[in-house]
Image (cartoon, rainbow, N blue to C red; front, top):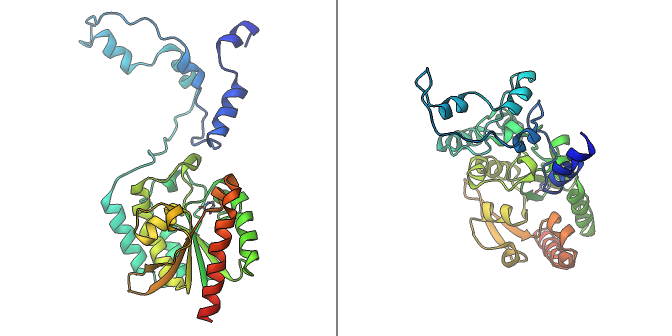
Length: 291
Ligand code: URA
């Protein structure tokens, strides 16, 4: 690129930095797409004219590609496009419910989830992020969805917020041998975007069954999405946190649940760590009372 042309086009390093800053840190297709080609001015539109094929010139242009794209795509092998990230499909939610119900162990549940293709998030995720910790634990924590580090390792809460979570647990004498950790959504949403309500509904039977199979004495909901999904409420997390609620399993077991602030939120809002600390003291007292 010449010095003159670099004044007219965004610098590629700036573009990549912008993508990273908004969470776009993963290529979703094997072949890169030349976005610069899309900002080259298109030839001026002409009034529609009939062509020998019977199509107007505009119709013909829509079936052939404009010149910069033609140059790019001619050299690129065919690309299998990832499906769009949201497929509203009640049939998939029904299948998830059936698979979840028929799993009688955590291993079976993991296998059913690994074989399930009904949630589009799986298409862009590297790994199923099923769980970490001790399935016999009295305490189960449920977050929202895996991030980049969790997606790479296939283990929940191993990135920055996971390290904070470990410190929070240590403060009340717990660690990953004495808790079990999972997420509402087991596949990383691309670019860490918020899972759609449909994706949440499709994944909900799996986490509900996971809770039922672990059967913890206490559930901790990390953040609003976990609390809202598993406690059937639309209240915000700042209202919910600190107050005991109940998660009722499909078979009717009532599990005390403590909604608290998500570690990722606490990293952004450290002044609220004291609130999470109070919530964890409640959990500690409850565990002592339960014995
Ligand atoms: N945030 C979550 O909610 N879950 C993880 O596993 C990691 C970050």
